[in-house]
Amino acid sequence: MAQLSARFITSNTEYKSCPPARFPEFAFIGRSNVGKSSLINSLTFHKGLAKTSQTPGKTQLINHFMIDDKWYLVDLPGYGFAKVSKEKRRDFEKMIFDYLINRENLTCLFVLLDIRLKPQAVDIEFMNRMVEHEIPFYIVFTKADKLSQKQVNESVDAYKNFLLESWDELPEIFITSAEKHVGREGILDSIDELIKS
Ligand code: GTP
Ligand code: MG
Image 1 (cartoon, rainbow, N blue to C red):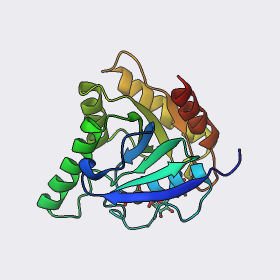
Image 2 (cartoon, rainbow, N blue to C red):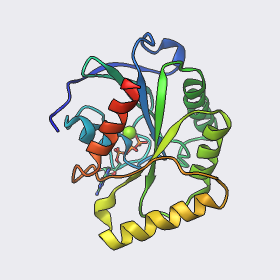
Image 3 (cartoon, rainbow, N blue to C red):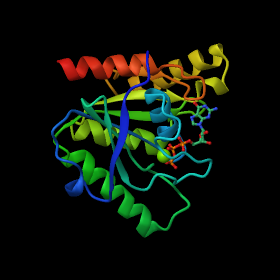
């Protein structure tokens, strides 16, 4: 699949200042350092489009990118970042939730999970809140290049089984590596389908 046309539009601290809701919108969320910005660069094949860092907490604003003049892609700050003050963390979470709950053109959210980790309370709580608020989301496992194929399968199966203990059905699941550009077609195809439907 070719490079997408992608351009940065704006960064905002609140949903009210986001660009007019004229296009379908897809946002990427997950814990700090899970690989949101890297995945966005891999999806679009634009290396420096979204700023990445080894230090958690790099993305601090709601960042809108216009893709192919057809849809908005949104890079969000990570949740559950322990190294900032309680007040700052609360502010971040309020900013993120206000955006998620109020953004009328948000078509689907991609929740990123590090494939190397067992289910983490902060991710499960976040996804349960999405279910409560009826915000549609898909799950994206990141950093698959860090495990063998066998370990990837085991990790995903264990995660699915864990979720099925409390959920009746699973959202669509993608396995990705931004480093190796794995999994991008699946995500882009699903976005295409949602735009067309
Ligand atoms: P915040 O903006 O701080 O919330 O982080 P983020 O979720 O946007 O993570 P970011 O994309 O900045 O990546 C964090 C670190 O993980 C960087 O050092 C990346 O190089 C690394 N990383 C991201 N994706 C992958 C991947 O698929 N494979 C490997 N090996 N490393 C990755
Ligand atoms: Mg980021």
